[in-house]
Each structure stands twice: as C-alpha cells, then as structure tokens.
Length: 289
Image (cartoon, rainbow, N blue to C red; front, top):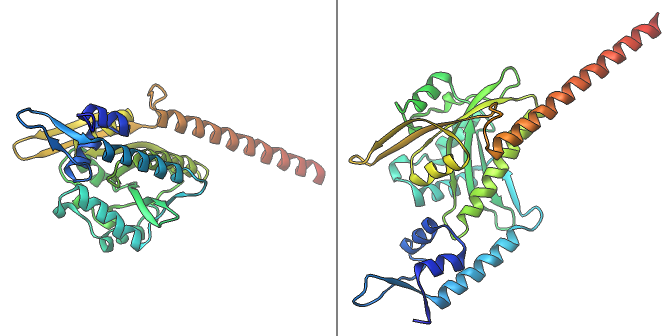
C-alpha cells in the first residue's frame, strides 16, 4: 500500500479542509480506490503529490502583486459567476446575468467579483447591498428567499444615514484552493466596507441567510449571531438567518474590530477637519476686522 494514501494522509498532504477533499473526490478530480474485502478507500500517492505541487504553484502565482482584483463585474464576469453557481446550487435557484445586471440600476455597487487579472477568470463573487426594509425583514424572518428579491428592492449606498446591508450571495470557485479564494474574497469585501467610510457611508449591521452547512460554518466563523433557523430535513430546507453588528465593540470578529477601528479613525479625521475649518474661518474673520 506504499503507493497510496489514506484519506487522512491525502487531506494532510493537500492541506485542505475535509469537506473540500470529498467534494473533489465526488467531482472526479481525485481518484478513489476501493480496498477489496475492507471498508476502506485509498488514494493514489502519485496523483495526490502532483495535485499538492500544482496547488503550491498556483498559490505562488496568485500572490504576485496586482494579480487579483476585487471589482464590479461586467457581463462576461456575471456569466462566469453563474457557471460557478451552477456547480454548487440547484438550477432553479440560479439568477441569469441579464437579471443580475438590472440590480445595478438601483445600486451600481451591489455586486463584486474576485478576478485573476492574468487569465481574466472569476474566482468568486459577493452580492452585498442595502435592501428595502420590508424585504430585508422578510428575508431575516425566512418568509422569502433570495430568488424573490427584485432589482428595485436593492438600494444604493448613501452617506445620508447609517445603513444595514444584506449578503444576498457569496460563492468561491470549487477547487482545491476554494478556501483560499473565499478568504481573499472576504478580506477584499472587508476592505471595501472600510473604504466606504472614506465616502461617509456607515454600515451598522450585515445580515445574511445560510442555505448550506458550509455557509453556516462560514457565518459562525465570522462571529455572526443566529437569529432564526428552519431545518426541515424532510423537505431538504436548510435556512438560518444571521446578523453581524458592526457597532458591537464586544464582538471578537476580526471584521468588526477592523471596521470599528477604521470608523474611529474616520471620525477623528472628521473632527480634525472641522476644527481646522473653524480655525481658518475665525482667522479669516480676524483678518477682515
């Protein structure tokens, strides 16, 4: 058996989550060998080693400066995003690119994708936007799902007042390094939320609904608070609504801590600018007298 790995050995060699490993086995990317007369599966060592080397090479390339970009998607990007969705979700839940584009008329920044700028490949995407309060409430209460959100339900980011946002969807391209894509995507989304502060746009809370166990684990890992759950196993209904309060200083989430620090820095700058403006105004009045 020296030419084979056990599942545990293969997972360790590839340095990937167990769920990702079995997803790749199911997809046929990793060969599984049945051991005769034993309830055990083995995996070709040569194939696993090759995949590990390929993974290391790709990760090294993606870490090059300016290789990845977090941008508002164009039509071709949306086509790729739907293809990714098709690998993960049921066909009836897919929202076609033409329908997704209609959202931009109401919030031009409702969607972002993570792209490999060298290959022009979409590696993942996130739809994060303020919504009409009535629609947001129904989503949180699990009365409707994301397919029922209309383009006109999206609202633009504004500096007029603090806002609540909803993560309509977040997805990473299935692969051995999908957790890497997801991590980069979430870090970019965090940086984007912080960048909104420079425009005076304040986000109070982020809501989302987990529809898979993987999404559930992701929400918990970012310290979202569970609001409501529907676990109807018989009808394959898995929905849990969550909230992340970006104003909660006691939350141990790195996202919350980074956002609160950035907001504090922004508020200090605003106060400093106001003091400088007041001083200049007073100086001008003194000179005129």
